[in-house]
Image 1: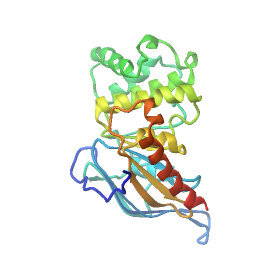
Image 2 (image 1 turned 60 degrees about the vertical axis):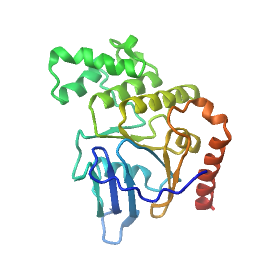
Image 3 (image 1 turned 45 degrees about the vertical axis):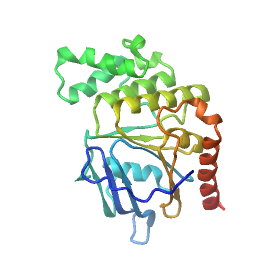
Image 4 (image 1 turned 180 degrees about the horizontal axis):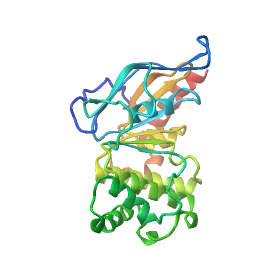
Length: 268
């Protein structure tokens, strides 16, 4: 059975996120040039949860994620991560973009070591620790390869390893698999689920793809546009340990139908 999520209390826990009545207005050159992007958005995310956000283009999904990351400041309202108010960027909040954002002059392992250096890990320890993260994403065999020699999927695996190595309390992902081919995308989705189950890190994942959202998320948050608001918060009762075989079950199809219907009503 698919249920609405009724704002579970996530306060005070390492990795929890509370979005409290957040609105965001973009302003142009004049006083009359204002574009409301988000309106009175509230969302509670428990530590260790995997939440996907879907909605039509322009609904503010990415803007909301950037507010969580501290890249944007809300016009009103507040966001707390692990109980602390978000004010600017922090290593406690990792962000993974659709673009791979690797340092092209550094090998795969050196890209991961960079994150470890930012954490203060001693130089003599970095390679062995970085190799553990590359192993986690299946990239240890390409540790010494430069990004230019890697495929898109391999680059994104390295980007994920670097994000994990930074040890953020929450991982914020903005359509990270959107530019990849279908086969690579599916493989990385399963890898991400396995890594999440192992690491237990809070993940907020923005996507346009309903099937991806239902496969990955414990919850799917549906947004509407003009301005962006949350219209549904849907629990996905598929449990952990999902594989691609979940796509063929009646439970998966039911969940996908509920999310798709919510989006269709918004677009109608």
